Length: 179
Ligand code: IMP
Ligand code: MG
Image 1: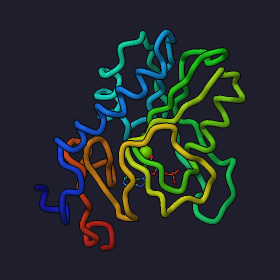
Image 2: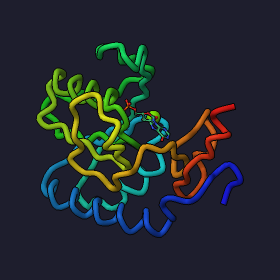
Image 3: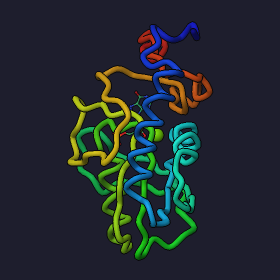
Image 4: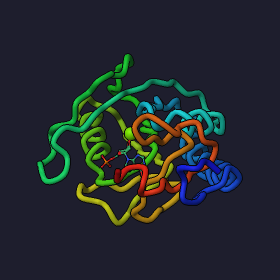
């Protein structure tokens, strides 16, 4: 285990097993369709690549990078798009793939944006869900794991752009971000 982790929350095996279950469920739902799958950079990339390989329907892939301004007590509407998708979402079945839902700010705004642009349907698939932290109304259509209010890294998730390559999900030691 990495020295900056307090403990491993989800092992590689646990993740693989659960992602396979969720992938299967999504695949069944999209039979006969060609969803446009949008990965939210950068945290979702490992989950994204494992997830899309579980789908048997034809898929198209795209990516978005966003950052939230004035989070915390400030109201919504401050989502900044750093990189937009290349594809037109009008009339498409869209699947957003995200690493983690925390306050819900990012996904509540993204879902509204893609619906506004005319997507036929917008589903949210997330690896992790911090249920106790929600400030914005958003529920994932598919969620792999509910987790407690602790800062986690690995399997794509970072702290200060580090730890994304850890193959498991670990709880980061408080001393790393409280110094
Ligand atoms: P939200 O907009 O508050 O739901 O925040 C979602 C974003 O916050 C995610 O895409 C992550 O980038 C980041 N985030 C929230 N909690 C964690 C965590 O425990 N580890 C790493 N990133 C996190
Ligand atoms: Mg992120």
